[in-house]
Every structure is written in structure tokens, then in C-alpha cells.
Amino acid sequence: MARKLKDCPHCEGKRNCTKSGGRSCRDCLAASGRSVHQWGVVRCSFCGGRGKIWVEEEDEKS
Image (cartoon, rainbow, N blue to C red):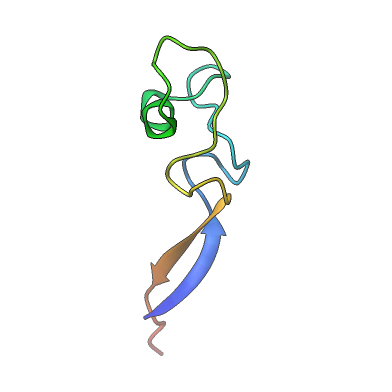
């Protein structure tokens, strides 16, 4: 299997989480140490703020 760098499905490559109507989701807020009641945009906790993740890709068989 080969590994390929793809856009993060959570932040869509933007590096910051804006899943909850322009604000960060509960998971990303908790990962940054913020309360869910605080407004703001924090880095994506799924990709670590990189915007890309490594994905295992099946080898194509001919």
C-alpha cells in the first residue's frame, strides 16, 4: 500500500476548523483547551493545523 498526502476531510485543507457555522467544532475546541462556550476559530485537531493528512491507498491491480 502506498501513502498519499491529501486534504484533510475535516477542515478541507483550510488548516482551521470552521465546522460549526463559522466557529470551531467541539472536538477542535476541546483539543485546543478552550471551552465549548468560547467563540473563536482554532486549528484543526484532525490534521494538527497542517491542512493535509496521510492516507493509505490501495495498490491498483492490473
